[in-house]
Length: 187
Ligand code: IMP
Ligand code: MG
Image (spheres, helix red, strand yellow):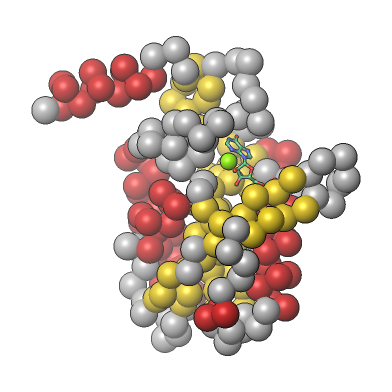
């Protein structure tokens, strides 16, 4: 079984990745640590997890199982179109669910890049009546190092990465590790 598994991983990688940046085991270990930190931060409280679809769903699915609190789940599907304007425009496929009112929200996303998605959503959720909004991202790129998130899994170099929820044109989200795409990379 381990041999079959590693052969399968090689096939999946073929022609796509130049390297595996963060292995499955290291991700699992860090997700456990983040879950423990979040559990401690919210001890005695209820938490509502808002995974940002599609990129944040793999991370959120693992993270929520490492959080030992009463929690509910309200996925949000957000896409951002930066266009030529620096502010960008966020589109929410089904808006902000009414149930967020009065709740302590934890937004879970894959990566902090320009930070527009998280910042816009934080504001929208507070305006819609959330009691508090906390953010958790698996990755933060080097050039985003001054952008805030409450919980961060890994700081990574400014490379285009895929896997563990992150995609290129919808592909590679199923890789169980984070890998760097062979150039030319596309954001
Ligand atoms: P931003 O922080 O608002 O710019 O949005 C971050 C979003 O851009 C993420 O949720 C990803 O969908 C996408 N993104 C940014 N960098 C990468 C990358 O290296 N690989 C895959 N998706 C990325
Ligand atoms: Mg994406």
